[in-house]
Image (cartoon, rainbow, N blue to C red):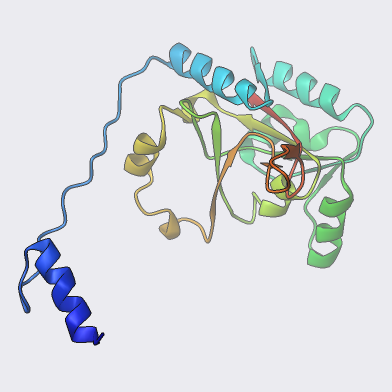
Amino acid sequence: MSRDHVLHKVRTALGRSAGQPPAPVPPALIAVPEVPLEKRIESFCRSLEKLAGKTKVAAGLADARQYVEAVIAGQTAVSSQAPLLVECGITSLAGVQKAFADAGAWRAACAEADVGITSADYALADTGTLVLLSSPAEARLISLLPPVHVAVVSRQRLLTGLDELLTVLANPADQSSAMVLITGPSRTADIEQILVRGVHGPGEIHVVLV
């Protein structure tokens, strides 16, 4: 069967003829609901906890720092240089390593650490998702290599969902080389349909809303 015959059959099925210009692209169907902040917080926590994630609604910066310190509890940790983490005093906690110039040594430190601490550029309430834009201050390794991931996020960065994210951040490539969406601990059921966590990323995730 020739290529032209195949294309003819496709056109006939679509009710089109050869040389006919394509129809215009339909408008994007994006809807951003109006949801009060407290409802967004409730939705985010409920969605993440359904996926075995852990949440903490902090009363302030000190409360957030105390929670993160309790999660670390003597373990080794690496931290990004996100402004919110610096403001909370998390980057100054004992045992927390901050990014250093030697890329190879920093990669090794992330691979060996028990806990990785980041902030997040946005969070999505309807799915319990974190949105991280990779940058020199927020390296992807910190959220991917350690078995435990702790994210400290401003409540003002809590959006309703993906539609709102795409209105706020229409062209992520203009701001970052990579946008990572994290929804709960890493998990897979590829082998015999048995759910296993932590195979290709952190098996435990904590999100602190400040």
